[in-house]
Image (cartoon, rainbow, N blue to C red; front, side, top):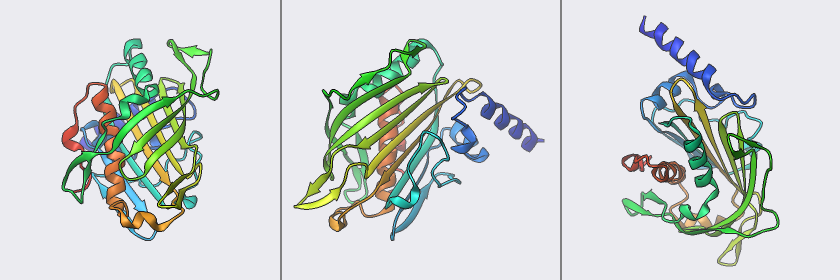
Length: 269
């Protein structure tokens, strides 16, 4: 009987998640993952070519979601890290505008922390962050719920290990859902060696609103292609380290919308 009730709940949740035909909750979460997320769990997985993989939480689906907004081929990247979960928030105009402002205010990224396995403590991940004035920045005139359907921005962050990273960001608001695509727009060199070319580092974030659960399922995925073996000198070379980085992004986002989950900062210790 309990199994039947749970199945009915999952079907209802999946049917009520957003209204964008390109977004299907089942392409991001299995039924068991939906249950775990609703119970407050974070589900994290990371894989690094030649170094294996690592999972945290009751994660089942470790493959990139099949989705029209997510246009990155798994085979082209050396590292893939995924973090997903759920947070309660009424789907009000005020809350949607709050999320929109946060996703387009890149200064808030400064101060992001992650759990460092080498230091065995929380450490600063993003040392500074700022929006870049660019002719490529734009805001769509088409609006839904007083939110632009598409916003394009450029921003930069100072990463504690990778140095200065510059991204082009596209935020789409569709069917009560937020879809963020951040793609590295400039190459990166370190110690005179080429680390990244443009497009080698990508971050996608999906916030999928569920009417029944009165909150958002979140799915963040990072892709990285590395052009040099210089990273082998850092403590970034293990999949667990990348898992902690992607977890840090979601914990920081939640903190900035008033949800304190810092106790879950370490996906891997």
